[in-house]
Length: 303
Image (cartoon, rainbow, N blue to C red; front, side, top):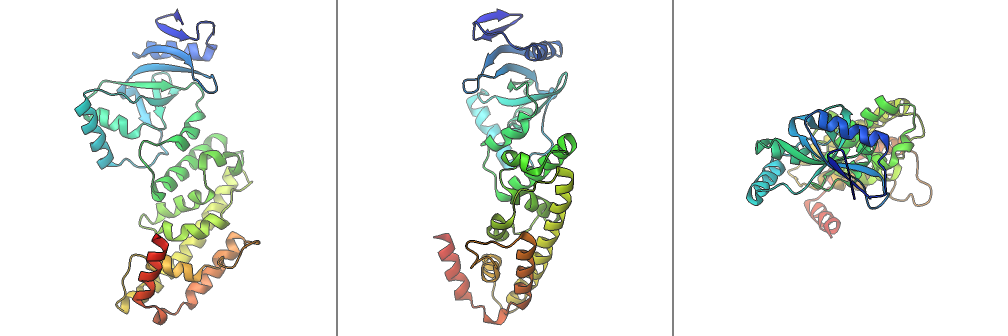
């Protein structure tokens, strides 16, 4: 351990790289405090542990939407403990301005509590902000939240690194169907993504095209899903007219119409799959559906 400037450097024999030292100076010039510059224990990369003015930190714009109930719970717990013990991760956007990829709810809770500072681990490598979303366990994502987060991240990366392929960001996006579902949730917030995900998971793959071109294909795929969903809604409406109303009905219909049921070794393309699905939904006979069929299928699915 050694002192350098007003902060501690660890390990004692190490020497922080120039860009880490420059960030430390910027933090202090803009009213923050660097507590330590250190190497993290896995990859031994340099990071800065700091206290930052709260107004200088914002969530990355492609994160999931804020959950007010979760903010309220965090606020109550922090207030009960009378201390903030969970530092956020930040990357520098410009001198005196920082983005956090994993601290949206903690920031909101601190603002509710009228805090002036937030303890933060500043990572000098800005691109890590996209990767940290994969480690975000602050609040478990549901499918809608994850998909919206991924499509927002997609657009941010498209602006910054649009020449790279979609496939190059498979770690950040985690699953290719999140991208397609993200577009669908933007168009239809109440879209039944969970019902379509068993099909999408098998046929939606990462594209090798540059992000700008791949995005056009994603829009086409979302349109195919949208068209199938429109027919599915008509089928559901027909079933409801018969007095049958069940929360599992969409999943049940899609399972009956799924063109991949017998596809074991050779899975058809995305386009072919949704063309077949569309035709099957068009031909679906609502008069053959009974409530006991739905109830039995729902129990089997839950088990």
